[in-house]
Length: 284
Image (cartoon, rainbow, N blue to C red; front, side, top):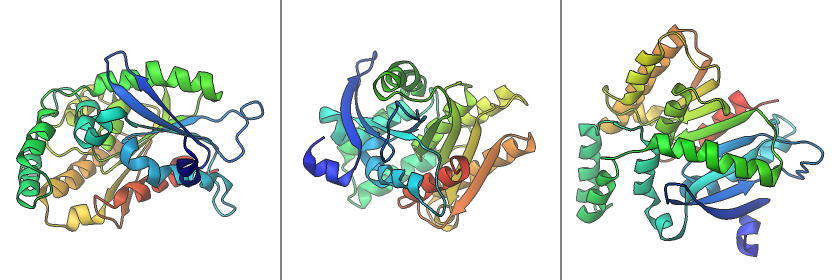
């Protein structure tokens, strides 16, 4: 990493990795202050949407030295997109973070149309954004994280054998729920911030029905923002409502689930959600 970026993201390495599926990913690895794997091996917390999230979340690695509420040591691995794909991360994430067969909610399409009218995106950008939602591959991306990226992190950074975590926000939160419900064994805790369960016909509800009473052993922490629920945007209202429905169904079955309502909007809630996950699932 360049001297400039090293000053902004201390103890952070960057590399790029092409998946078996031919996609290029950018990976930021932030190690704990003074980390020495020869003395103590730390587990990994994977953070999604690295192009957007790394600057907001990686600096919180210093919480491991907080004298008032220290977190258990972890290595943060932020995963985003590399090369020319980096500028298109906002639409490419749809391909990777959304479960296969996830319906495109009407409220979501309406939100995109509102963005066009407000000048936030062009028609061409909107069409490309929605196109990525018509063939989604969260299963392939989960396989990349667990079978391709994690072995490299283990090899290069001397990680612990267990205790790993996953955090995602918005569609990243949807992916986190998907990863949790599909029963993978790599993650022992999962943070799902404002998960993008926009429609009542989401694959998340189908997976909940499929699992029955046999919920995963991994700990799940789910957050939503009060302004999603109380605001006037239907897409966020549905997201908050459906997240609450997921939470109620899980707690009714005695799942290892915690939750929090944060005083944020959907845009501002990422860092607060990540910190809530750390405090709940990774405090000493």
